[in-house]
Length: 74
Image (cartoon, rainbow, N blue to C red; front, side):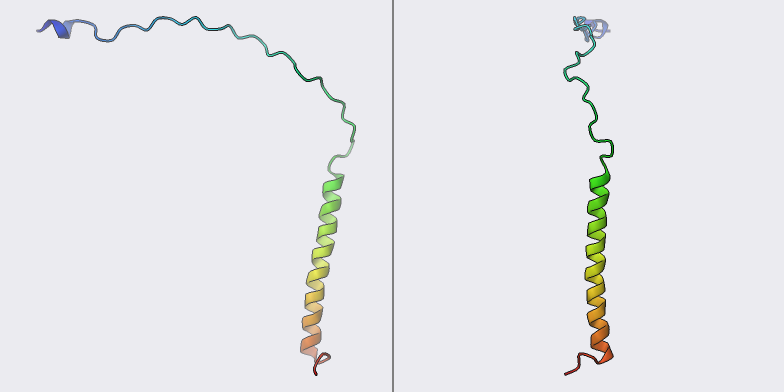
């Protein structure tokens, strides 16, 4: 057996001095909720867009119905 096989090849790593964990400081103060219903603008915008899209689709369907009924025939 050779002397290389007997020696320890891997050395132990030195222990690291880690910084002790401490609680994070509270940077921001808690803000007061001034809007009691924050989703109302979202629902209003959704309702308006739904009404506008249904109006557009309805107008396209009305034009198609009038065209096929013969009212708009030249």
